[in-house]
Structures are given as C-alpha cells and as structure tokens.
Length: 358
Ligand code: SAH
Ligand code: SF4
Image: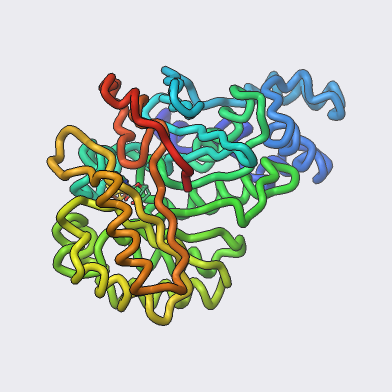
C-alpha cells in the first residue's frame, strides 16, 4: 500500500509542475499562468506573497502541502581574475560568467556523465543521474537572484550530455524562453553535444530555435575515437548529415568546438580533415586551448602554439569564422572540462588571465 502511494505521489514542489499541471490546481485556468509567473518570472518563493491570487486559494495550496522548491547551494567560488563564479549545488555545478554586454550561465544537465571523454573531469565521475527540468532551469533563476542581475545567455556546457536527457532539457528550455518564465531570447541559448546523432535530429525538430554546438575535437575518425568513446557509436559522416539537417531546420550557424590538445590534434593532417568536415556546412570554429585536468596528461598549448594552429586553419578555410576561447574561471576550476565537484584549486592558475568566453 505504502509503495503504491509513493509511486503515485505527485510532487508538491510547484517548480516541478508544468504550466498545464499548474493550471489544473486552480478552478480557473489562468491561475496556472499566474503561478508560473510568480515562480519563474518573479522568482518569488513564498506562496503567501503571490498577491494577485485569492487568499483562500493561496491558503488551500499551503494547507495541501504545496511549496516552491529550490536547488541547494553548497559552495560558491569567486574567481579573483574575471568575476566568474562557480556554484556547487547538491551534486552538480553551474558557472556564472559576466562580461560587458551579457551575463551567461553555464548549466549542468546531468550529475556526472556516462561518456568518459579522455580530457574531461566530469567524465571521470561517471554517470550519477539525470537532472529534472526544474533543477536545470532553477540554476538560471537561482544565480540570477544570487547575483542580482538578469541572466541574458545560457550555455549547456556544464556537467553532462544534454542530448541524453532531452525530455528534461527541452522542458527547461521552455521555461527559460517563456515570456512568463525566465524570458531569455531563444538565440541566446546554446546546447553543446558530444555528438549524439538521434538527439541532434530531435533537437532540430524541437519547436525552439536554440543554437547548437558540436564538440568535435578531431575530424579524423580514428583520432576522435581515441579521445571520445562515443565517437565509435556515432561516426563523423553521420554527424555531418545530422548537422546539415539541423541547419536546414533551424537556419542557425552551428559551432564546432575544438579542444586544442598540443601535439595531438593540431597537425597539418588535422587541418585538412577539419577543412573537409566543414565543407558544405554552415559553421564556425571555436578553438579551446585544453584546460588542465590533473588525471590526464595532455599538454595545454602555449599561446604561440594556439596562434600557429589558428592561422594554419584560417588560411585553409578563410570563409569559416573562427574564435579562440581562452576559458574563464580557471583559478576556481570552473573552466570547460573542469567541473567535477572537486575543490582542488591550484594556486598556480591564479596568474592566468582570461579572454572571451562562448
Ligand atoms: N557533454 C557536452 C556538454 C558539456 S562539455 C559536450 O561534451 O559537448 C562542454 C565543453 O567543454 C565541451 O566542448 C567539452 O568538450 C569541453 N571540455 C571538456 N573538457 C575540457 C578540457 N579539459 N579543456 C577544455 N575544454 C573541455
Ligand atoms: Fe561528458 Fe561532455 Fe565531458 Fe564528454 S566532454 S565526458 S560528453 S561532459
């Protein structure tokens, strides 16, 4: 009996309910819109303060045990270099990156990750669990309230593979882009994937025109398999087809992320392969100098090496926009690939200054 009850328990956390479910709580349908607006747009977490709702309705909700939940912050690390803040929540992390004209939150979609890329700290943790949609959206709301600034951009580049948790990722994007929700422009949301082909098709067919980033990292099949086990399952030619489909449906230039692993994926052969891969695609390349993760022994490229690689690529494909992303927040282990709930902060990173981020 009690197991049955547990299984059928509907959550009382209003944040975990969809607009449809919220609407079903009141006798009038627009109560759902009002609730949603209080929760996601105004960020109010006390039902008694929902002032445009009848007092009896508020009381009824409270008496029935409804509440506005929140993700729980465990720790906050503020970068002394560039204002980046890493938030550690219960079992996942988010990063806040302010710049002159935008304030970006890098969100996690899973706790840990099952894909084990051989350069990524999150991969070392293994897979813990999928985050619920409200936990994903709440990273943005929580940080927005914590820093007292409107969040303008979201990147799904924290922990986890978003395309392996698509139902929750899609619902979180609905909350982020809704005008009665977080109100973030859909073109200011980027989903980054290691290359889950069926997920790319599904996201292409999703009714929100978000931007897509593919973690390519090598355009030579065998090389890619060496650093990304998932590459064995989804091959480069299939990926390219999926990217073409995405562009056809969304008409948004796709970002190819390419971690520069000094001496590994920066040869002339790699340049040629990357040129071949980009042919027929509408893409831009984002070069990411490898951020050190103690468990791996890749070499971070020097500035000269990055510059040299950049120009060799540029010469080969003049028409492909290219940027170098010197990751931010290295001193608080908040840079790309460094999210692993570890509090190892190497003081030697403190002198590293940062540039632009994604
Ligand atoms: N799972 C998704 C999104 C999270 S990873 C994906 O792989 O795309 C976000 C980005 O950080 C990816 O491009 C990833 O490849 C990159 N990254 C991982 N480890 C890194 C490291 N050590 N240095 C630089 N970038 C890294
Ligand atoms: Fe997972 Fe992305 Fe890290 Fe690979 S790079 S292990 S897919 S989080």
